[in-house]
Length: 292
Figure (cartoon, rainbow, N blue to C red):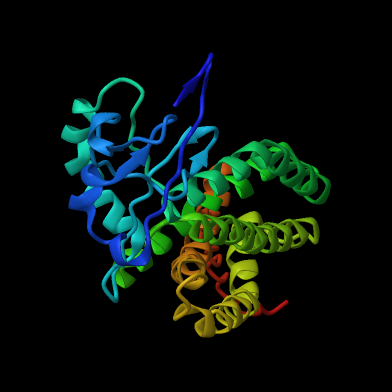
């Protein structure tokens, strides 16, 4: 009721026998100031309405959350991506001040990706600085850096075959995969430079360095791939393991094939031409001794 400029809530509670008889509310009697009992319907308007026991707020806005469980073997981002286009008609018909936002794993993944993008320039600069200190050449630095995308071929194929989503953990695996690929490239380029400095012909140095370094490169890649097998079945870490396994498998093969050819193309190394055959001079005929 109103008292001056204030509205005071009046809460009444019936006896236990009458609490469930809502149709009897208009007949309840209320004593007035002079002691006369009047029905509640004469002094109040009764209507039924729904009320939330707790009003949830998010970012100072009232929020209503709809949640659901997903079937086994289905990823939450895939379900959200399938539902969001069907909600577009509802979004367009909402009155001003109302909106529908996707939460859950998609929201958390977007927050994590934003955090990674914020520090990615610093990470790239630090990576380039370390490579420059080790290689001490802009040409070799560019050669090593452009081999990092080789892992995308295997990573994308592995994620498609396994049906895993490309989310935050998969992005972490892709960043780690780029470092592994560039490490293998640095090993090959450094060995080629050492062989050339030792006096080997550039063309033969590329081939010999690749053959000698193929075994350690393959073994280290195989060790990393086998180490990711226990994580491949994990719901959370599975996409990262699949990304590293598939990307490193294909990238190792491409590194041993593409990097030598790219090095030869980058520094214009050509196969030495075969030298002309040495023809032996015809033997002079023996002269018979003449008598004096």
